[in-house]
Structures are given as structure tokens and as C-alpha cells.
Length: 372
Image (cartoon, rainbow, N blue to C red; front, top):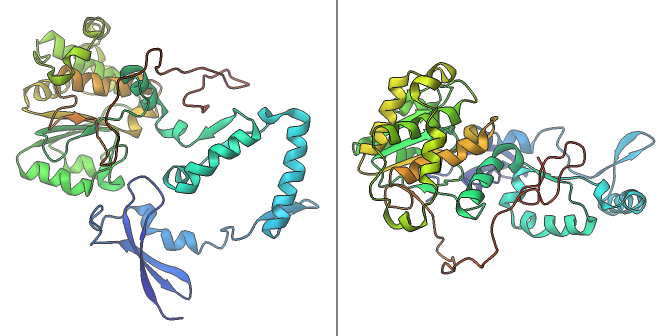
């Protein structure tokens, strides 16, 4: 069979980068970024580049395995489904659906089949023991958004094309092409920001590729993001840098004085030693955010996978609010899809709740029908 190329979309994450696959004898022998893809413009990350190795891995499952006499043996799909019905059915019959746990891996969120059929299976099993990749890498962000905006998916996205000052915390879009803020050619947009005279600050313990591109790189100790962000909030209040005009969201903003009180003890000098960042550097970031014509703070996985991930994720948008940059051009905006329905006022009594049930052993609260 001759060698040919095939244009595909990478299924590994929401960045949905274009791939050009080289296929020989019905096997993927090479993978590179599709330069003509209008979205990714040739970008490819290490996961996408290893597509061929994954496809040809000798340990990759190509048929169902059924355990017979203690040994996993290849079987037909009909045989496998019969075993599932018999053995899983027996467990559910004796112990109930709650005895079954379901784990949904990352690609489920990026396929139509994953969206359609996983909920049906979960309901059919009758279980609430559901776990997913989201509880590993972004659930604190969902909680912060839900409690702040009333919707756990009300993500704010930095207006990369128009912002004058961008702060990235806990993200490395030069490698990931962006996440929870997917943008066409994210690395190119960061370079364009610098080229038009804008400034980029990166807050990350590691000297990432994105940090190398930045005008300033703060390297706090891992897990101290919330303390550092609280210190920025502290400076905004202490130095009277909170925006006088909060823009179109002003009528919806409540709790400013409570935030001031919460931040009172988190001066840059108080957190500097714990964070491993000089107090003056923290103050400079706060001043630059307040002084920029437009600015946006964008946080990602690094702000979530730490002890105070929910607080840190919340503070990202607190700063966007206090600097007058929430939902304004050049700031952090709520996106609206091309086919999205017109916004409707929320119904009375609706809101975001957690803890409708808890995990069986540790008692951890449910969030978005999932357990950590």
C-alpha cells in the first residue's frame, strides 16, 4: 500500500490542533502540525507529535481482553459484552449501582460519542461514583466560577488580540497552545502582543518556554499562588489602584469591602518569604496591571492543582474585576459562540451548588456530579 498523508484533528485535548499524518501500510508513521490549519497554524505539542508511536505501540489494545483462568485473553466484542453483562450485572444485582465507579478520561470531553453515551451509561448503572480528568486538573476553577458567576462553565478568556498587559499564571501556552482559553495560534498571539508594545508577565515556578518569552518571570514556590495573588489584591487597595470604573459589570459587583478585608493581612512583605518572591516585584505587577490601558490575568492548571486552588482560581478573576478588566475589550471576556442563544436572565432559585452527595470513604463533596 503506498504512503499517503491524511489531515486530521488531534483528539488529545481541547486545543484541537490540525495534524498532518503520514500513513504507510495502514499505519501512522509520522505526525506533524498542519501549517494550513486556520486554527493551530502548524502548532503541534509533544503529545500530538508522538501520535505515530502511540498508534503503533505494541502494548496498545486492538481487541477486547477477557480474563480466563486468570489470564487476559483476546476475545470478540460479542464475547466481551456478554462477560460484562454477566459479571457486572451480578455485582450490581447484589450490591447496587453505587458499587460501580466510572472514570472518564480526557478525550471523552472532546468527542461527540463521549458527550452522548457516557451520561447514558452512568444513568444505566445507577451510580454516583463518577470521577474524571477534570477533577485532577480544573475542578477548582469550575468551583470558583460557579460561586462567583453562578455558572461553573462561565470561563473568562483573555482578549489576546487587544490586551496591552497579560499576566499568565500556572500555564505554558507555548507548549499547550492554550487551555480553557483556546485561541487560534496562541503562541503567535503572545509574540504579536510583544511586537505591538504590550507586556507579558509569567508567574510559574518553572522556567517554561512561555516564561522565556515574557518581559517578567516570577518564580514563586509551588503552591503559593493564592498568597501571591492576594498580595496583588492587597496592593490594589492599599495604593488606591482599584479601578473607579468597573465598566458594564459594575452593577453586578458585590463584596468589594469583604475582599479588601480578606486581603488586609496579605501584604507583599507578609507573603514574600513564603512565596519566594520579592515584595517589590509583587507590587510592580499590581501597579502595572492597574496602569495598563487594558490588562488580563489568565490562570490555568498550575493554579488548580495546589492546596488552595479554588481560592487562587477565584483571585484570578477578582483581580480582573478590581482593575476594571472583566468583560471588556482587551481584558478577560466572557466568550459567546457563533451559534449561542441570546443570554437569558437566570431563573429564581437557580445557582451553583456543591456537596449534593459525598464520596463513600472520605466524605468529599460532589462537584458537577463528579467526585475528586
